[in-house]
Image (cartoon, rainbow, N blue to C red; front, side):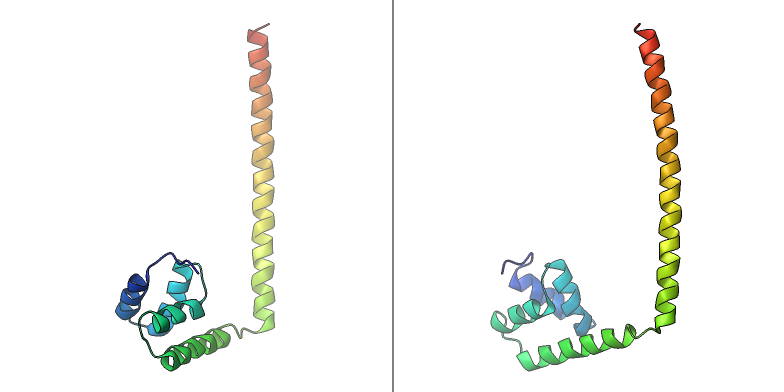
Length: 116
């Protein structure tokens, strides 16, 4: 797999990270790959301990699962609010489009009047 960063760059950024757990995730995002791919680079090319990296990976996954355990009612409220916001924005954009089309039509009539 071709990554955006070299193994040396990955290792340097991993070493400098204060939180090693989130460093795997951040490196995966930067390289458009999985956390496991980053761990594989560190193990195979840089000699890191696979057990330690797997432990960090599991801890990160557990942390994300705990954070996402939001009550269903809160999730529904957030979704409902987001849908309402999107509908409002769509209505605003439609109104803007109507104004632009009216202005365009007015300008076209003006131009056609000048050249006739």
